[in-house]
Length: 236
Length: 347
Image (tube, rainbow over all chains, first blue to last red; front, side):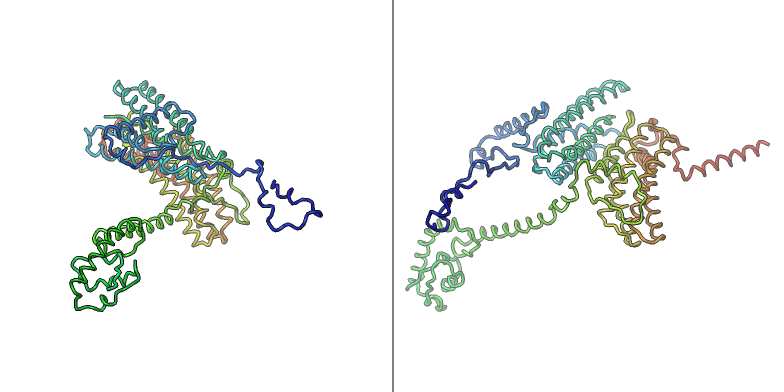
């Protein structure tokens, strides 16, 4: 505690001291915690808007961004508890993945011209509005993650399902049948579980500890809907 | 001549030099010394005076340029480098005003903190409320408590959407996932929001003690029974099983909602009206989801692909059993009547 109490001891012997004389002797001991941790996931580096990034060639910029996106893909494929995705969030990866998925989920428009357009838009809308809903839900439950960080994580964790879509497309080149369906079903289930594990590894730390299940459940529903879209896709 | 022109009294191209002093007076920036001679002299000053004025102003303009670079407030600096400065200042002002308005509107409408108290739940609470939604309580003498939260109902609506989509899974049929998704989301959210509003309106008419939030929460948790029934019967396609579940599980959740509403309403007519409407809508919605929703889906598929669709692997293709229960008796009667006619004709 403050040592001023000790310096102003000896009640009867000392002459009356001026007011606040002992203030200079006050020191705070190490027992009182006066520092804490602000648990805001922060960005590690801020882009400097000087001429060094403006004057570089377009190829440099694109390669740098692509490398960042590729690094995050690796983090999703091998999910560990790290906050790389949270620290340096970007939305390029989710955009690439969403566009790839939406393009692959289109049917060939041989039978009806209207089939191509709405499906692309539907997948797009579902992915982005689903991610927005999950983010709002986790913020309302008391999580301290920012809006775009959450969008970034959810978008990147669609990567396993995009891989599943690729595999399903390849498998569908073979003859249709129950084995075909079983193979696709198995692949989609495994990738679905992978997506959920990956997003849990990144998102769970930002929630209050007793509400993790409440925040993860809508993520489960979201990836379930995307898996359903992938599984029931049949090109014709 | 003791003109110490203000820095803002720059050379205005085209404007009469006799108004120079007048400008200084208006803006009040810079030097406070105003030359009365210039101000009153509207008939035109002498050229030498104006030459001196312009010279001094140009010198001060060079000095004040550096100062004006840091100056950020919206002072009217119209005289100095008029077009550039003025337009920049105006643009700056407009930007700041627009930004202020936008941030005010944003903080007013996009403030999700309004909804924060309704999401303040623990998993144990959600679990217990889910289980309680199947247990009708008999005490109707005093108002029963309804938890006003939105997390559980929202998640149940999304789960219902997911279950409806899951029920459409099939291996061979071409499905336009987009339309089905939109229909599923529209049906579930439309039911939750629409029927809640309608019952709230009826409750207002019948003088029942319930708020909109409580009604949303009550109906949302009532969808838990629907989720269970549909999840089971989409995987096990037995009609008898569906009717059993419809009565038991659907009936239990309806009874719970009815009991809560009865406890909050006074008067037998009002109770009957309110609870009868809610019970009818809730039970019929489950029937609709199991039977007619498939017809909506098949209708969409029919209009898309034409009549030659490969037969689907689902029980609702079984036409006589696909009719709602209310019309089953009529069907049986018709079949009986037909059988009677056939027997009569054969004699």
